[in-house]
Length: 367
Image 1: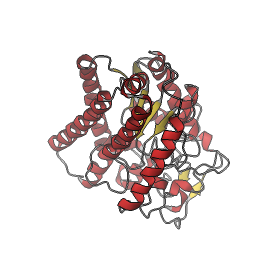
Image 2: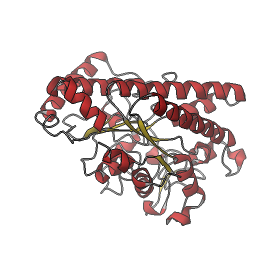
Image 3: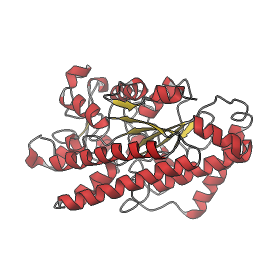
Image 4: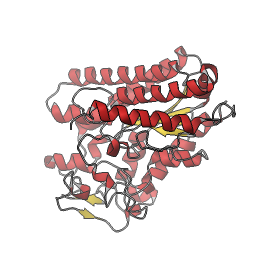
């Protein structure tokens, strides 16, 4: 995919700047308990940003059957309905954090910068907003708020606010797809680059005032229908190389966050064990009230792993289930609205064995 043209992108940034300045007028500075929800992430958290990128591509998530559980309102979310950050916003009694790129969005309760396809690392991923671009957009918002309420009040606001993050899955999906014969040493080296860059992103937000971070770790990539379909020789089993890379990342990320909390005054964090939470639902669907865990609601192939909505050109045949709430997964790599609500509930008030050392409710309750 091509990058947005610089002229059109500049025009969009001017529109966003004007919108944000109008939105924050008299809103943040007057309420010293006000807290925002900032979202940084990939397709799991993208509320529809990619449809506004003007890069010449069309997101399949902007048309049926995406959004089918929301009166067929296809908003660009890769699900049949709401996604995890939407529910978190509702649980926190705030507006659903809107897409950063959507003209006219109200950022008074926060903003969602997530972009489907986003990676921590810049390589091999163009036409989407990777972590670097999302942090740059956060910086734009931070500067506009500071300009309106002053540097001191802005930093206090950023210290009270919560930062919800989901990144890394696309990095490991891309690496293992492009490097099927990578050695364990190469996989570890790549993982260390991803975690180091992600950690630097946390530090960048911290430098602007951020203190409360909620992170969803990397999921069980090797058990996704799209992966099983890519490797028919597995005969329905999960791909161990994808799973092991995700586990390496999650262990290193947990250690890195512990170090940050010891090093950076006031740094508080929450990790949702997304790897376990989603994996257990895929493998034990009925335990959580679902009927189907290993096959997606929408797509084609043995596991409905590909081309939900007909692919990027909308021309390929696909199947779609009648009741998405009976399925854990909506398409080959994304969860249904019902699953998203369960995951959001775990993030919001999960026990320390699944969400810790804080959960999101506790982070929001902190001053």
